Length: 91
Picture 1 (cartoon, one colour):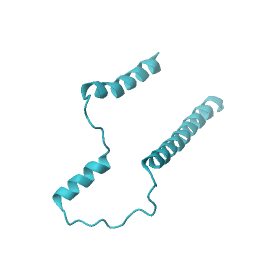
Picture 2 (picture 1 turned 180 degrees about the horizontal axis):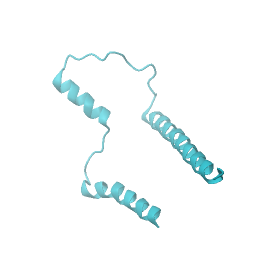
Picture 3 (picture 1 turned 90 degrees about the vertical axis):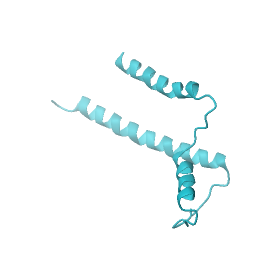
Picture 4 (picture 1 turned 135 degrees about the vertical axis):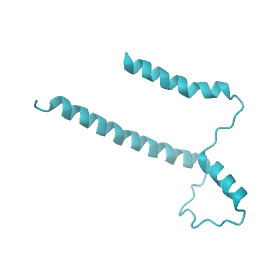
């Protein structure tokens, strides 16, 4: 029951901002940082550039999703391994 309540709490926390700020543009921190740097120091030159730029936004989203999925798999494995070790260890 506790997990179900926590799950509902997370869902509510994710949905409330969408209703409170209906016309808001939810952007990432990278874009905001870039705008701030351009405002503070217009002549700023980045130290390096990307090795490879994805050909489209869809490819970039796909790669980000794959990275998130791989991270979730690793975290799930670690949590599952820890629970199984705790469950099957001799006491």
